[in-house]
Length: 432
Image 1 (spheres, rainbow, N blue to C red):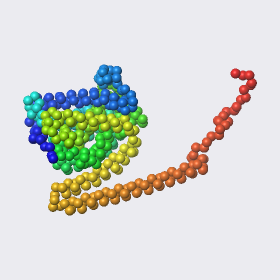
Image 2 (spheres, helix red, strand yellow; image 1 turned 90 degrees about the vertical axis):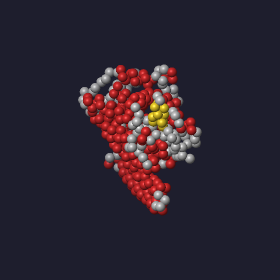
Image 3 (cartoon, rainbow, N blue to C red; image 1 turned 90 degrees about the horizontal axis):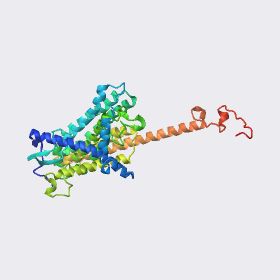
Image 4 (tube, rainbow, N blue to C red; image 1 turned 30 degrees about the horizontal axis):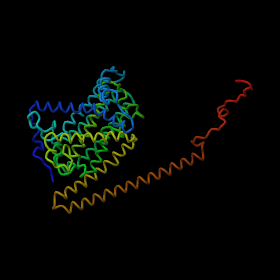
């Protein structure tokens, strides 16, 4: 049974609010995100600490709740340093470019359907567009310029490598993320976020389109540069990556704010496109669970649980190698996504067009068989390459073992002083 309420907003409901209602909604969104950053930092520290059998922040305020406020004040009041060789304009502009698009991307997320806000019936969403999801992807792509400019303007090799890594990573995972949305667009028939939430009244797309949802979850970490895909920072090999030359000042605080905003945006998009948005859990069909301000509570619960999952992954998985990151994006996620989109299109054609049902079934079978054949072919080729490489390495190792002078590392004699040209001197007896 489809739970479609009369209060469900459509594109026609946007653009009719008074100016003061629009300003109030914009301020509410800004306050929500700023408070979310403060509590998100505290919550992530607490959750990881509990997972690792530690207490976490517990000194600044009750339960350490003021720790994020203390960190923000510290970074805001610290001396603002500029390395000598940086491009000052771009060096200052880069953190701003990282933050502003993240705020704008969250403006298309629906928190609830039509609500009564100071006597005015309005959707609890700042703005909606016929291409709202594309707007979100565009804002995510623009924010990458901030990371690249931060690395380039710092005039540091570590920062530059971090910026280049970020560019390559976002190009790789932006494609896979966009493809994971295509199946949602096919079933919903729209790119509007409010319309997509409305289309999930019968079943969430996380269940109906589970391959797209799983691919998006992987791309979510790559797009937000979170562990295990935080290669642009890479403390182990790049010191601090693109932010190496940013001291713990207000600029560094903006970079951290941008990272959390991207995480929040990824969580909000996951809830909107795949987890039913503001809709109550499916077994709950009571009218009060879908009306008024109650849907905002369901959205918030889903949003927090998604953020908990992101934190759990950070506390559990190690950072992958860069070649593994690129291989996963280009060789696994994109091909699997393309095959899945073809299959979804065939199934959708079968469901909608009864006259072409047999053609759609035949096309679906061909797609599945072709995808399996291609996968088996590439799997066989990769297996042969691995076996050939293993045989080559074993042959080189055997050669080096038999002929140490041909490039191996001979074991030095145990008589190390004589080996290094040092002669033993006998110590007279009775000498201390």
